[in-house]
Image (cartoon, rainbow, N blue to C red; front, side, top):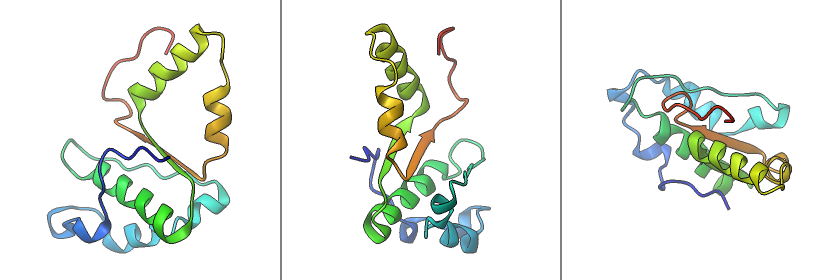
Length: 117
């Protein structure tokens, strides 16, 4: 289960109000980069559409390309990993993520982590 925060697609993204390259984003929507284990990093200030675009790429991957996708708020993932380690079950989440074609980490760098995170 992808656990997307909302359903978004590229048709609903206003490229005219963004500096995002529509051609590049459309190319990324093929998710061909996942076949060669490449990373994509969306950079921009708050409210620039990074989460919308990441979610739209996930939706495209799932619905059009049959990809296995998982979406996390980075803080939520770190908290889950800390809890997993505390419970003596370290590695289970990592093993599950290895089975994914695409893992999206949203809000990377926006909130501080604990010392262990």
